[in-house]
Image (cartoon, rainbow, N blue to C red; front, side, top):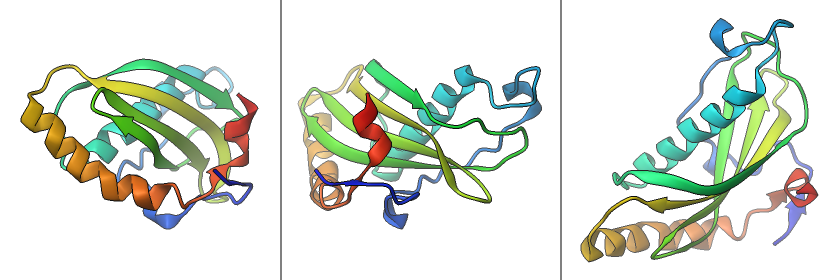
Length: 149
């Protein structure tokens, strides 16, 4: 897959989850606390699944985060979710977190997640929903920072 240093992969990847860094999410320096980066990524992953009509509960099997830049409190966040693979057992995504208004790349997360439960019919529905998404997403460059893991 191609890599890109462009600050936003593609507008089609922008999540419907657009949280702001609230006071409870900041450390003593009024910067976004690293623990809440994962929470923001989780909100974006949930929004991605919801936007695709996938309403099963999922659990993270593994994830890794690359923290690239600090984010001051009060900033609006833009998150992207890029599907890079899936099987009947789960999803493989790369997510990016950007701080507004400059839209600089602050962090990247790679995750593998699996449905907690689901029937064969549910899995077939997920497969049919994700196939065209994967076909589109594999043509979009991955962020340069993803390769630093």
